[in-house]
Amino acid sequence: MSSNRWPLRAALASAVCGALCSAAAAQTAPPLEILLREATAPRLIVGEAETRAAEGRASQAQARLNPTLDLQVENIGGDRPYRDFQSAETTLSVGQTLELGGKRGARAAAARAEVDIARSRAGLSRITFARDLAVAYAAAEAASERLDVAREGVELARADARAARLLVDTGKEAELRALQAQAALSAAQADVERAEAEAGGALARLAALTGGEQTYTAVTPGLLDMPSSPAASDDPPLTVAVAEAEQTAASRKLDLERRRATPDVTVNFGIRRLAGDDATAAVAGISLPLPLFDRNRGAVKSAQAEADAARARLAMARADAVANRREVEGEARAADRIALAAREGEAAAREAYRLARLGYEAGKLPLIELLAARRDLIAARQRHIEARLARAKATADLAQAHGQIAFGGAQ
Image (cartoon, rainbow, N blue to C red; front, side, top):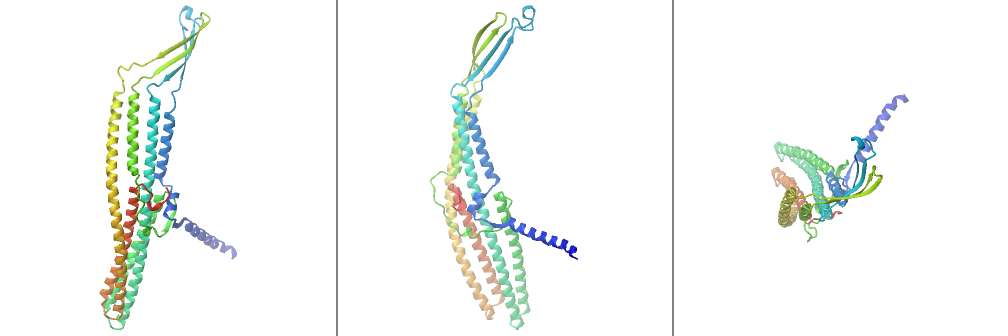
């Protein structure tokens, strides 16, 4: 008897462990600032890795050319006196190429400019990620509130249906009114199912954006009601900073290509052993390429065109940044006004529904007026949520336009 209980106990233990593990894996998302600090999104990793790669190339660009070691043996394997090594001449020399025209310094400067580009792009990527994360977080909170509104709508519809049934049973309403109220209740229940699916999708997108394997069942509320205006900044937007870094890098690359037209000199020094004379002598030499055919003109022309394009892109970035700042500032102000109006509209709709409910229960208003008031209340609450979500998005866009982390998160 006792042995037969072991499978049941094992199954129960497994179920309990599974429930505990599921609860540990699924939890409420931490506040936005903490979530941003702990995020391991691939796009952040890419920016950091590309910066390290550029720093490695900058370090390599400062290296000098390696010397060459040369060993030559002459006058061997021939006829008569050169048949063996008795008349051999063995030369051991070291050669070093000297970069002239400041090529090494120009190469290092160009590589450092690439590091600045990588850092600027990584910073821009982080600001963009912070904006996207804030929008996703706000969307998840809004979806959760929509679900709450839908559930409240079910409770209100159920209360309306009970009131309609009571009036029908007392002969004050026709059976049609009870059927209409029941149909409204069914529609409200369908809205809950749809809102649950949307909330789950929003939470899944938020979890995926952070780059972790954590599953969230809710978010920490409050983001939709946070202040909407970040501190103004006179610093250029990061898009302009990236364009400036690219323009600087293009100019330094042009300088490098111009300097590469100067030929390098290779000097050699060595020792020669003359076996036939049993003597040793020093050898020295110098080699210099003649720039008759290749003067690096094509590379200079290409670098000049790239520098011109970089200057044009910088001008475009500055103009776009000014226009974008003005646009998002206007949108943020409008979003504030819309959110305030939506809040007042929700309060008015709630009071209208309360009065309609009292009037219907007193027999002074028809059911259709009560149902319309309830629909208006649900719609007003949804509009308020959408207005607050739009304000959060505008706030995130405004922070991005000013090169700041949305909602004051840690840099």
